[in-house]
Length: 57
Image 1 (cartoon, rainbow, N blue to C red):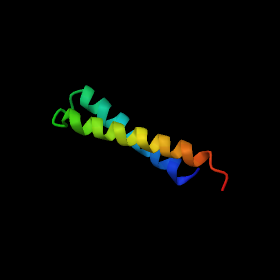
Image 2: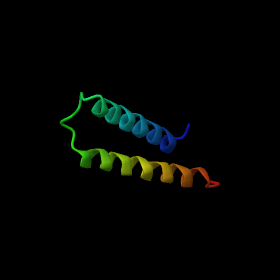
Image 3: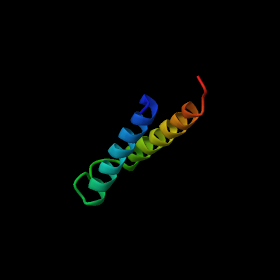
Image 4: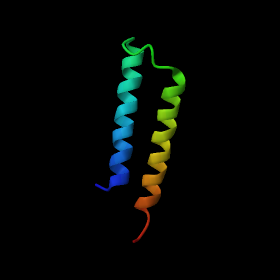
């Protein structure tokens, strides 16, 4: 697996854990803005990995 795809999956897992724990009330001190930033970074990494996957060289 390429490093770009691996970074995407790791950031997606981190986002899911943070979001899930905040939903259960364990990480209530996490502001919503931080979750949005992590979400945007995850989307950006996904787009970057997709673009890198279509390159021929």
